[in-house]
Amino acid sequence: MSDAPRLSVVMPMRNCAHCVCAMLDSLRQQNIPLQIVVVDDASEDDGPARVEAWSRQTGQPVELLRNERQLYSYGSRLKGLARAVAPVVWNVDADDRIPPNAGIGDALECMEREGADIVHGRACGVSSGSSLQQPLVWTEPVAERLSGSDIFSAFMARDYPPATLCNKFFSARLVKAVLAAAPAMTVRYFDVKFLGLLFLLHAQSYVACNDLLYEYRMRAHRPSWLYARQADALLLLEQRLTPLVAGQAPEQTPAFREYCRRRLIIQTGHLSLMAEAELRQLLAQRGDSHDWLTQNMLPNLSREGLLTALYRSLAANAARLYGWSEALLRLHGASSDVLAGETCQMAEESLCLAAQEWLCGDFSTKTCCRLARSALHLGRALPTSEPDRHAPGDARFERTALALLLGNARLARAITDIMAPQVDITRKAN
Image 1: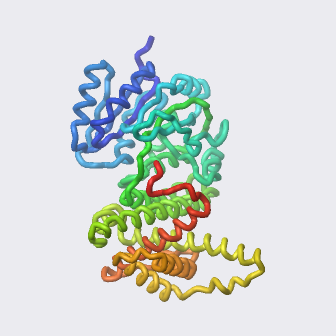
Image 2: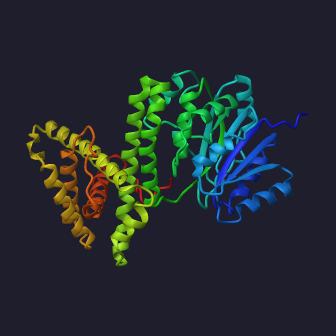
């Protein structure tokens, strides 16, 4: 029997000493000839030493690459993909695992039999402290089989395209195409969105399989700074990948841009809700909102990026809430004139004043209502085509950014209360 690997596994890691060996153990249990490539992203713990010790103890070769400086998952994964030698390539993360009931062998046989560029399987999630596998419906295949440009268009037709990496196998041909096309850039978060979409964009054939391939370890919650990185990544995604989509699948460019903006609105809503929760706790401890903004937002998202995300989200959320209100008024025969708002400048000043009262510890219903009302008026007054025209100078930035975060949190909470009242984004697992 040949010792040539049937499957190349690429795994970036940073500060994963506590979990990387568990992932390696779960890979070895598949009893498939593997090439394992681990890319250490300038870890500050002994993760690399543990990987080397695991390789010696088990006899499973591991190609360990070390980044001298942090490249984040995007740069690290590309570095590892360039070393893959097997005909089929699989991306995994060091803090997840391959479940005992995974059908890796069956999925690999499907890949080899079909000769597809992508085989898309299922994934589950397990929360911290639990062994219960939760199906992740949003990661499941979109069709039985697809070819050519239909692959990317089928994913773009979804409200939440499952552009994941870890529950898919990719052909060596497709990996080479993505390596040639991937822009050289720094992506600090959401690398799966960039690479997942590039794989879909360059694939020629796609097949679904019903096998469970992957188990994500779910976070208890995500702090605001992680959502800030997500917003930063989504702005970069739209900027850098739109030209690639326009060149490869021009008819899908509008759908791709809409996807980027829709995801940005959702993630910015989450960011605002987490910011509100963290600021409220900070104020109870007599902390400083200036320090919070400096430590949590600005290292992860530029001033311009933060304002762009907040203005876009505010405009979209206000439009949705106003649309519902107008529909209710029409239903009851009332005039929509009662929804008349303020000018953009007046509404922004009202929002800043209400936010200042909140930041001084006034969390009363009256103040929260003023925040919501001013945010609605401002969002409605913003231009719908490109509501990121504002760029306050240093003196106004902090006041405006905090007001937009709190106002956007009010609107996001109102929408969540209507659409999913049982969900508390500040506590839900991700």
